[in-house]
Image 1 (cartoon, helix red, strand yellow):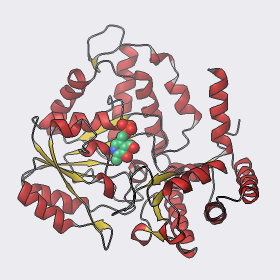
Image 2 (cartoon, helix red, strand yellow):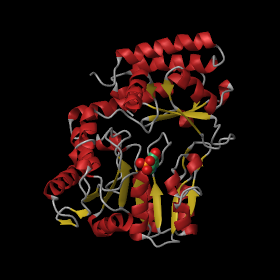
Image 3 (cartoon, helix red, strand yellow):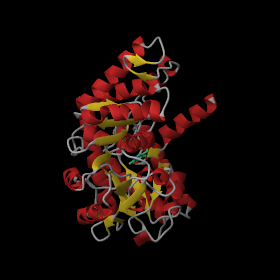
Image 4 (cartoon, helix red, strand yellow):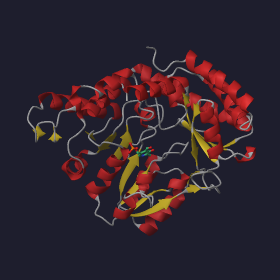
Length: 402
Ligand SMILES: Cc1ncc(COP(=O)(O)O)c(C=O)c1O
């Protein structure tokens, strides 16, 4: 196991991580995750535990909650969900009954599995309908959302996505939800760091519930969080524990507390600004080389590149890029004629390379190298040359200095 961990450390240092859902957490996060809090059982909440010996556990969880509320300006925070999907499930089950109607974004247009995709157990518990993007603008069609809300009459409307490069108009979505007396939930897993830093608008003032994960743009450890209005606090608490989970992972709660403190500091805001700048530089770079980007650019940390103008598929691009040390994922583009395991696109995220300290100049170099590798995916000598340049970039911008 020690060997495998060392090899993973080496892989992280020696490759460029362009997965939009990932980032490079600082060592302080790992210290908290690997701390003595890994072993304590603490069913319940601060001051109301079902195990003795929780004096420090209570202090830890209260501190983490206070930081989360301060960071996002939320009335209530529950930090116990083990993951983003667990957080979403807890929200659904807190105020809905099995079989209730929920309106969410289609997976193939950028939504998430846990938003009622047929492959997710969420779809067996609730009755989902999906809104999509306007295929001309590739943006959310709020008129369609409104129409569907009125014909379907959902009890909850969900906004939020895993591959949507534009901002979401939460105010408009909240208004639509109100007009049909539906709850409004936002899953901001991908963009939580950008929202925390205030570099893009956040959903907290508009939504009944906001869920997110701490390990993407937010750059903490793994885990999920639910923010909600005070009026829903008790239902959320009961649904998470004892409803859906048992003991909380206190070590992960400790890491969340560290993550929120780091996110409250000025350096974090600067980095999130650079994350946006670098994503915009990726979009501009690919457009300049004759690739189409979905929506013609980005407002957040990710870019969806349509590879069809170069006769490439997502799967070929993903494999070729991995072979030279660039980690991206293939991704369907809206209206994709290819199946999800092939795809016509790749999703590129800027958080990882921004955390390494890279800026627009390096992004331009990375775009060049990606283009060269993808277009020469059968030319081993070209690929070897690209690999050397990627290795050099990685050495110049280490993830962990020690
Ligand atoms: C929008 C969205 N929600 C939820 C999740 C799920 O988070 P987890 O994998 O931690 O359950 C993701 C993860 O990629 C996501 O993109």
